[in-house]
Image 1 (cartoon, rainbow, N blue to C red):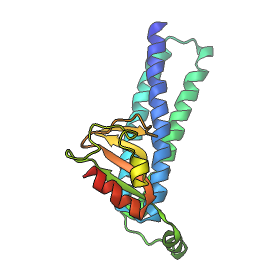
Image 2 (image 1 turned 90 degrees about the vertical axis):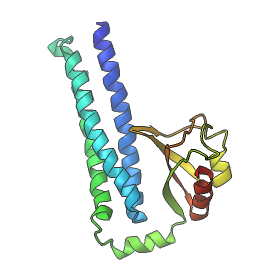
Image 3 (image 1 turned 30 degrees about the vertical axis):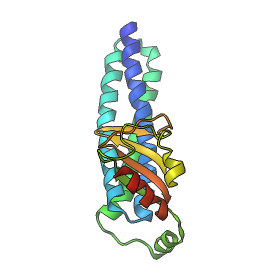
Length: 193
């Protein structure tokens, strides 16, 4: 029974990550379109691929644990598979939105007008080795207070930290995804360089 629980724990952890990443993909896809930003659109494509791979890993753990369940007990396993499928579909839809930018398709004039009206932008910034942020938490560096940018995600290699907290430590090579004003973007880039 202990093996079954460990396998399901792994599946649930993957599912939570899939949900968080699919939500991030939707946010980024709209932002890539709003600001016609190819870098953000590329991140959406990367997330979609990552979520596809996570779905296969989740299926592995669920199938591995299914042998410990009787036929009448498998409904929770089916529900986990359905949730994984839904997260993947959300990520696929986010990628379709981002592909408008990646394929350099024309954006409707109403959306262009809306882009001109907004003060908020989303930016992607890599933390450099000599940055004042390197080795500090977001709270210690007072990133939001000092720059006006709210960090919504951190990519560290292949791993994503969604909804980072003040206690999230930042290292050189980390890629921050943040939103704020255009003026704030310059301050964040200076902090990360």
